[in-house]
Length: 151
Image (tube, rainbow, N blue to C red; front, side, top):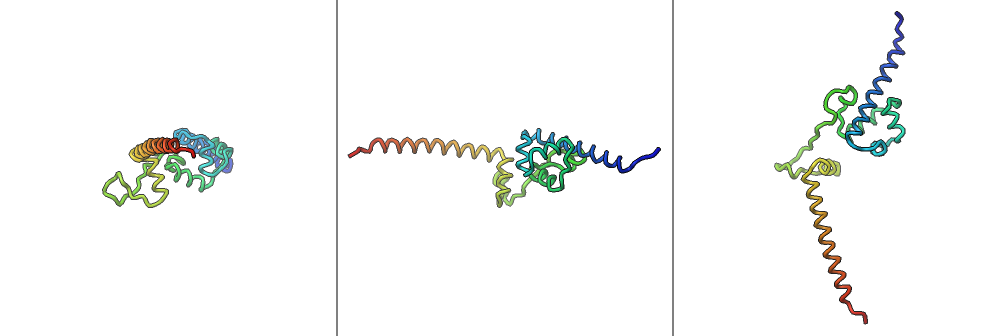
């Protein structure tokens, strides 16, 4: 039996790219984002992401780095199909109180905003308060405006 190693290796690579593409599509679906949203975030074209998801594209290491960093994707799952899909990420804090982490960078703030239900509820509370106070200020300004007599 004559085996062509080059053809077998090409077939394995193509099959692996299809598997990786299917896992990327699964990740995107689990994140509930469109191809366009993911492509824009990773800074590639939508058609290239489509090619990757179907196994036609062969992304470079920067694509995988961005995918892992932006969406906390477990590369072991992505390449081998093993392990959890997403990594459990934690940020270290200097504070003894876990509700008040030490936020030093914009990246830390964004990470905290996305993952903290407490933060989201606080922001919604502040927004509601601002809306209520703004409405009262506008009503007071309108009353002042109407009370001015034209000479």
